[in-house]
Length: 282
Length: 198
Image (cartoon, rainbow over all chains, first blue to last red):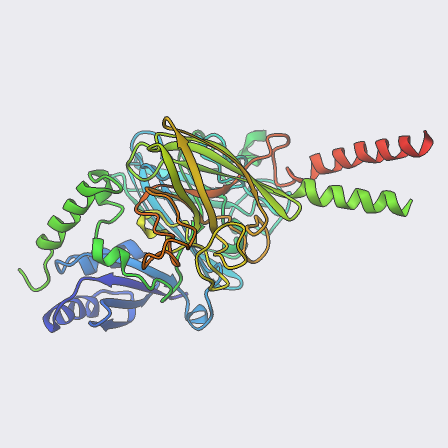
């Protein structure tokens, strides 16, 4: 199911539009796109993970920030509870070993939630990913409770019906040799409105999805320690971000590794970045 | 018997009500602490301690989004579903998210108050949104500055955190809220019956 991703892109002239347009035309999986120079908005319709599309736009030398995310269905509604975001690690979330990531939840239609994410710093291979019942990080990932479940069922495979899986069971994601995992999961049980205020957790081991022989397999899929987590919070749907906060600043989650979250030094960084990324400069 | 059932259902509703927590870690200013939100009927009790705020009053607001991907800046404006002007917590004309000021004394801010406009349930639930603490005093819409009626002229955002669901700590699992509610209901039932007998 294709979704619309709204990027704020710093574009100041027609040649920026042409460069971005030329790039997106050649990205396989981009079905449609629309560029609004005045508003600095690039709207992309695709099934690709958002971070991949973002990288493609940024490869033209411009900073792109996700401004909104939604489906054609939600485009004309107020977008209540249709988009959520969780930031893992860093100062917002919690993690061990420097893992950082961002996971977005989009209610594509009443029976389909898309979970789109990028997580860095993992060991190569598979890692379980689950929504947990609480959004309490006061004791790191240990205080977020069990897997979120509306059906009082056992742990299981995401393809199983309610009762044979937890609502929050999303299976596994896989990290490459570089430690990065980019994923886009479609799920029929999970709903954005049910998980707001809860949390998403990535585990050390692969989730056996309830197919193991021990009792723990039916609880957490033997997925091991909780490595990184973040609270699932409300995010802007399409065209809900009226302020161009991100576009003016341009400091993205990935830059924040080196940048303070606020204050003068953040502004300095943003200024430097703006200059470096100045549109039309090659 | 009808009275008992009525009391019982009332207790269930109040105890079943949710709790939430904000852990302040974001903002880069060293401000930290935990604040909990407990739904008590139509009121929400807000309690906690925050450290490292400069002495004095600081605006304390629920903002619309819980998106901290660009720090406290990406949380949007004060949560304002009814499109009202900024005001004091006791004003009729206020944003839902207007919780007034908190006071820091020697760097420690004890927070304990109730509010009957915010809610942890329903269409205007504050879950998944953010609480932002500002650098300056919220003038409660009365300062006459250009931004008094929008932000209370409260200055920059020095700390923020996402309002997350809080574990009750009694029973794990999806039914965590119902089990203590039932046990408390039974206790109440016992007390009520005892009173009837006495």
